[in-house]
Length: 406
Ligand code: NIG
Ligand code: FE
Image (cartoon, rainbow, N blue to C red):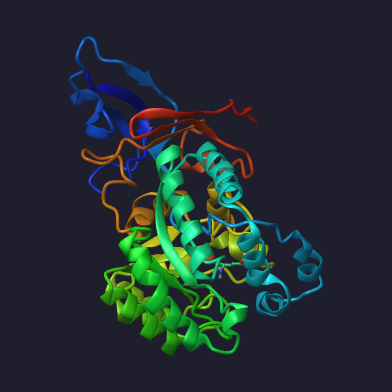
């Protein structure tokens, strides 16, 4: 097939070897980017197609590196309690994760599949081309494996690529009430070997939090999962500063997630161990908290910082990645370029992938074309969808509606 080209005078390549906004061309051959050329240094065959996006910000396809994609039911009934001041861990006692577990256990494979498929279609409309998907609303062997199987089938049957994470250690199910260690043994002995054998997940994650899984339990579980060949992630220092980030560095996690309550030592440890910090500002927003993770401090200390939705029915019921990014800019006061790196190059690092997240020869031709003309304008219309085109593996996957200029 003849290569074809994308032209833009504002290519945000996320490649440190290129200017922030390159005036040039992307050469696309099949599913991959064959070359990235400055405008005056390109040779275009006479018969090659050129899609001209002059005046438009073009970025790598966005990556959402932390979602709880597959589940059933809604938790909007928690809103009144949240408004009356009840905190996340209080709600966990009364409704919370276990409410969603009940709904998910009751749901059919088809219902879980159709719902997640609709969510992915909305994510695509925001320019997202790769998503991480955690299990963790089954908490029994059958439902955990079902949720991972749903993600695996969806990976094949819609445009977005899915990276799966086993998060059976999301909460302690009623069958193991009061016996967190017994539950972790069950996951290690009974469930994880099957997840591995069926290639249902590359990553393992655990909710290390006060009253959920302790630092000691998390250490034992993650070390055992690592020995089985899984890559590691960790929900760490979300509500209570337990030393989760320090543990993520100690056991060699690829990424540590949430980190709203991270300590200075935790930041230094993430930087030294090259653990990606995956921050979830939409969760802070939906928890009605004012404590955002210290993203700028982490960047200043040399930590790679990714940004994600944390899409889930309790603490972040949104699939809108630009909304989460907008919170990073407006509430965490992050420069638009650093926010965009959080959902491109740094999000790829959070998924241990070097073939996505940059517009670079050899990477997948996952490309997001915005109606905005630069990163500042992209963030200057909070709440409105700015996506003009999405290409996934070199094919047009989404076409957006023009945004009125204000
Ligand atoms: O990432 N923190 C733990 N898990 C989810 C919330 C899940 C839920 O409330 O249903 C999170 O915020
Ligand atoms: Fe989460």
